[in-house]
Length: 272
Image (cartoon, rainbow, N blue to C red):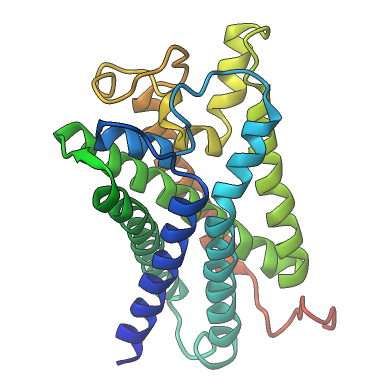
């Protein structure tokens, strides 16, 4: 019952997030349009989202990321709370912290996937109801690509929050996570066509937020559903980079969990 209730709350959070994105961000379009076009908008692009330093677009991206940011803090605090509880009641009796942590982070990934999937579906349902939409295979491929990318970013940021909270306390970690997320989003403003293309590509490729914008993807695998004059990030690179980020932050956080003891070092009050 407890697990089912927890999943239901995540689905309801996805419902609220999806409705918010539909009402605030998805553009109504005339005539009949492919599902892939609406998924591209959902990823952070308004049609032909050109690469230039337009900070109005950056503010819109910050707005579209608000539900994710709230959920990232929720997931990060949940894992940090589990670690604090485990330090007191579990880890003193259980030798294998690694097994416990892998189980916790696997559950976190599942929750992130559930939230991002629910958000995307509930954002697109009104589109289907109120607009003439063509359900094409490319649209479903775009949707899967979008959900994976957003889930990977959510997972990475949530565990990063947990690692920061273990060392600095949850309040400080919360502030740093907000600043870091804002820096990633504002950093998208480096996408200026006056910049050297190679330097521009490097700056965007290392920025996790840039990988969620499908209008910036560039590969034969996605060119059927993405229509944009300014592709810059290879799709295979996006999938590889975000997957590697998840494994790296998992390894780093596991090292922290194996070495750190909340009982001995109270990061919330600063006492030892």
